[in-house]
Image 1: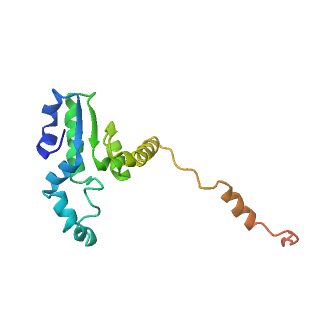
Image 2 (image 1 turned 180 degrees about the horizontal axis):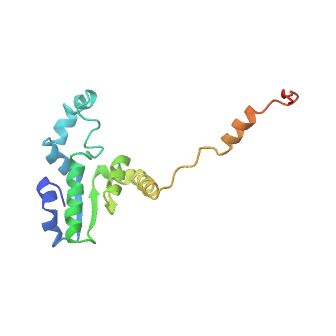
Image 3 (image 1 turned 120 degrees about the vertical axis):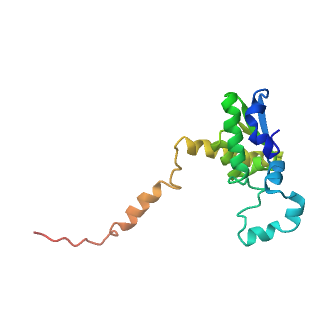
Length: 165
């Protein structure tokens, strides 16, 4: 388990004997921020979000600029030693769509989360993979273009004015 910043910073040493890494994102978030989740969520965290100190609750959506930076570093260090290293996260971040997308981008192999969040996690992982492959969503209704052309055409029984040379 990579749950404290030092473990992330020494991931190359850990990878020399480990076959996998699992980021404990709740504990890693607490130690990176230096705050206890229960105290933060029952006290000042809401205010920090309201006044713009934080964009999101870092215990619900992964803080990619801080915690994520450490995770990316650990992935690079670990895979630099063991290219076949399996890496994932465990915790509620695994059920958050933006967190799952970040995990895909940095090359994690899996995420885990509570059973009720599994459908969301699967959908988010599929979306991230499809976007990375360069697929773009289709228009909601391809026939809409036809309807726009149809509505721009003159109504039945009316004649278009034409100018003869």
